[in-house]
Amino acid sequence: MRRALFWLHLAAGVIAGVVIALLCFTGTALAFEKQLVVWAERDARRVTVPADATRLPLAELAQCVRLARPAAKPTALVVAADPRAAVTFQLGREGALYANPYTGEIRTPASTRVHDTLHTLEEWHRWLALGGEGRPVGKAITGAANAAFLVLAVTGLYLWWPRSWSWRGLRAVSVLNLRLAGKARDWNWHNALGLWSAPFLIVLTLTALPISYRWAHNLLYTTTGSEPPPQTAGPGAQPPGPAVASPAPGTQPLPLDALFAAVTTTQPDWSELTFRLAAPERRAPAAAARAPFSDTTPRADRSPTAQAAQAVTVAMRRSGQFPRFAATTLHLDPFTGSVLRTDTFAALPTGRRLRSWSRFLHTGEALGWPGQLAAALASAAGLVLVWTGLALAWRRFFRR
Image (cartoon, rainbow, N blue to C red; front, side, top):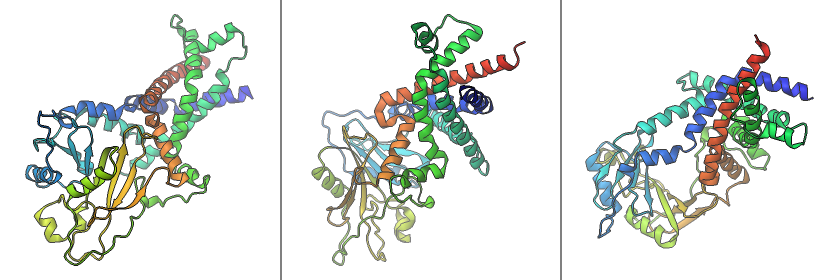
């Protein structure tokens, strides 16, 4: 059995080695992607708190956005409890605008080079940076290489396990020796790094399967007795919101500042609030022509011909929450500000919670910066494993 696993291990490594090396390189660079982008764009994202720290109303900040960027169509508004954080107006794929909550100054990062570079690396990591009709092909190749890497990690953990439990035999395969050279160095590094990184690599590759394959995604739901979401729903699809009672004729929805006050009053431990803004195409044509977005239309239909208003959707994060990636979704009555329904992470179906854990375990974010560091180090070790493995294979077949 050991001989059969060895040749399976060797064949998988030789065939998929180059793509696995690319996945490991880009995975190492992307481990701290969010932190790197926040740091690189700190000139726009961070503000100086004045002595008289009086925040401007959100409606006034929205007016500043309209004046600075008349064609901007924000899809979400993000407010952080940190007084040094700018208010973020998300523009979908077009990026974001950052408003100084004390002066109303609208900012954009002086340079987006770090963001653009990491985005390019992410495209290489996911589908080899292929576009158009080539994207499914690239995704299939990276998915197959990830599956091969899973086979390598599982079989390698068995092959790297020391045959002799003497200290000499254990040290030869578990302690990295930097003084070796040639074949002895490649063998020692391949065994030592493989033995210590295999458990982390198994988690990283196993959690990547639901991202690459629909059957693996559905398996997380079916094994827990949950109904898989439709494929057209997308990864971030939300369940339908609660019904909103019809108000008295002539009643206008509350402005965004009133809804913000209603949430912060009832949820004092909030750390970040994300208001989903109404899509421009869902508003009355005349209103859309006057302004691409209005601070008084957070996810509620303001059209005079609307049959039924929709609840305002607010995603809330709390400081010190667990899991770290979880968010609580509040559905507010746009006319009264009362909470119609609260969707917590613990109340989600088991399959959806498992899918979220799988997603953020793959990047290490589920465990905070220690998890991200472990993912980065394991990916870097995988890069060395590919190099040493191919070197050992070359010597085996082409010794002269």
